[in-house]
Image (cartoon, rainbow, N blue to C red; front, top):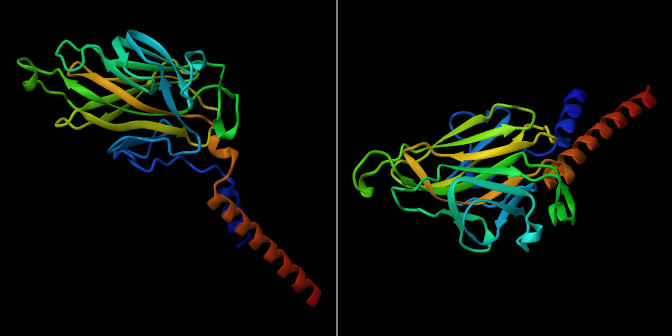
Length: 267
């Protein structure tokens, strides 16, 4: 019994794993390469304690731009995440990132790869309720988009897309990216949020880059609504359920110790 209580207390003390309310784990498995994959049926919002929304200033006709985590402010503070693409795009408003191909809706659309790279070291205002927290990188990503079908020949209305989106993830310290493959919907071009989060309990594992990739059968009409997870957020302040488990575990251990002492006095 004591061993069970000790085990329960230890498990309760571990940081909670990430959970995105609108998302499910893809049927390919709960984890790949130590991360949990998510595939969502709609927009994603930052729902975890360690998730930060991504903002970009208005810009047009560029292939690279920097964005800011957690704070929509002046461009001088946009220093956390770099965005690069293989074709020009527009950010058509200042705010929550929404990048449109300059050739969106056309068969000439050539936007197949959008790459996100951390800018470190930098800072994040408002992270975990504090100002100026050092930013050393991210360990999770969620984003969504819309696809222009390019497969086959003929008029645009007859084009097809194979429904596959690949996230090419380069983990820090690795030289070869890991591909996370998501099966989309070939009948609809609106992709619910896809991504990954938390390499188990390794709070110091960072991502060097994430590429949202489409093959030649499709191009990005737009990509948008990105969240990045920052290691350590959930371990900073335990959730209420964690505190309850901790208190219950220690209380039961104390009761066992009291009963042992009482029995000793009776003996």
